[in-house]
Image (cartoon, rainbow, N blue to C red; front, top):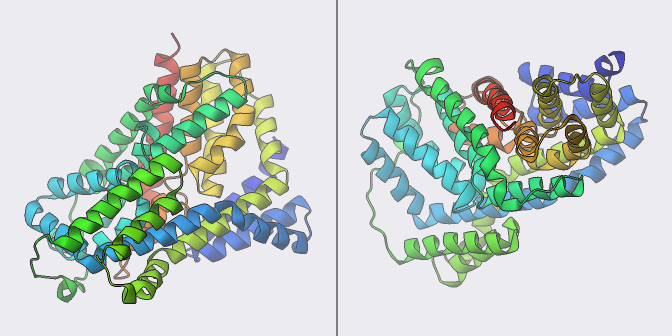
Length: 436
């Protein structure tokens, strides 16, 4: 038990939590926590920084994706398509909160599975809607939960876009570690996690944040009142979005998909070539901070692995596991929560957890459905709520343009409470109902 308490991974992540809750900048919090974790493990400061910097490349593809998708979103904005969408949403909502919630959920889900631009749509689409939200006195914590649901639930449940990548990764790691699992069968077990998240969303919208909340309305003059009809450049942009989706599905490469989409936009004249540099600058401005945090989070994860603390943490946890499948699953879910909260990515957590989880589950008699449910839930835990996760960074980027939405208290804490608890409970229910 002492090894768990003084584990460098545990102490480093606790430090990250405390710094973030004290409203220290997320980027600085990750760097300081990395150094503390490395020093506790006995690493020299030079070794820590070298490992940290070399490890930043682990999320380089993701970071590049965000920059290119940011440029793609900026291009959509320059064509006026996002203005048309925003104005259409405002008119269609007509002061009804539930309609706005539904639309944002559907758009967020589409950004994961149909047009995989991920969080790049948020800094473009959400700011024009803030004035309407202020009039409706919507608590932005509710919107953060809505966006997080749409960003997270689809890849767990729906085998398309990011969901296809996530579920393929699950199946491949299960096979590699001794348990046969067909890729197209993953969703047949993980649907229960999506159902749990739906329950968490319901609690957030209709219980926790249902009361009106006042904000200073500083964005009124920024809202466009012009109405524009769809034209050639808009149709080209829609075509580019579909091509981005198609290329990503065929190649499993988001950067390549975004690059092809940008190529269509520029080559067919939806946006003039003279604006190319400006669009790239806007893409970096919108998504650069998020991309760099993902790079830093990868360096953080690399240092945590180098300390040996992850292996020690998992192996120590295994020695105290009981014979009860429910209690074992609960402990494993806690292990996943700790690791994912530190790393900030559920995709990157799967290979770490699968190496130890699956042999243990085989030994304790877990079947395939039970195993994939717990593994998926353990990997996804913390993605909603982690200060370094794109699931939290994205909503904050759109909701805090006027400085009235705090990343930790208004995004991370609400999403952590409503989704991580729901995921744990639904995974435990899955262990029970999939036992037969």
